Image 1: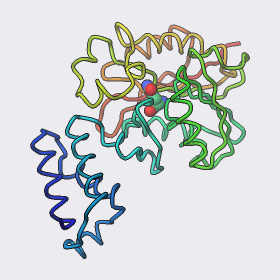
Image 2: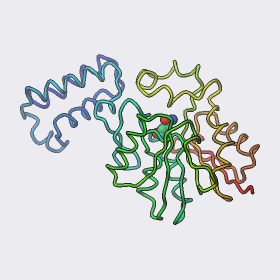
Image 3: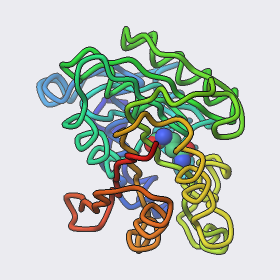
Length: 281
Ligand code: GLN
């Protein structure tokens, strides 16, 4: 088969399977399997693809047709212009989260220490460490050792030094108020809403990365309260939040004594980041 025939057939199979971005996903898989660029595809659409490559391509198409996320097949996701390794043990980095990184980056100054709570793939912490012009250092914490293995792999790939610690929220973090900033995109979907999510998310993102318990706010409550013990005076806490959680999370922060609590919208105009500063003794 020619590469054009293969691509058309892949697109058709994904359309038949009801995949929304069939042509796009068929393309990314083709690029992943053959390493071919758009330019060389259009330059030589008659190039023959056979044997092992063709088999691997149609195997990937069949997997994608079963709602396996594209990123689990290509093992990567771009985030903040950087390429992150991903697998089934981490939440696939979302573009929605870039606004948190951009907001945090503007507040960083040389010498600051960052703690990324629920780091997953490490995408937030590692983007900050890699892209921030100021010299900053950081720790990523997660309850999943399998997720931390992915985060460490990403640190190595991006050439970034970071500390990773494993345990339930703050339990593995060295005690003391020594962080200038805590960033977190914790699990925030109310349990009952998970079953209504698309299959790619519901069945293939790690359940523990999604589940924010009954009202979705379980981790915000704990991080707001426990974070006070780890933030330097004047230190900042920045969260990504889910749909409709801005008022509740702002309220939790204000009640705990954080000041200058603000909400920031994402590019789609939805409330996406809640942040505040802790000035307590
Ligand atoms: N911090 C990671 C991310 O933003 C993982 C978040 C999570 O697992 N809830 O992608």
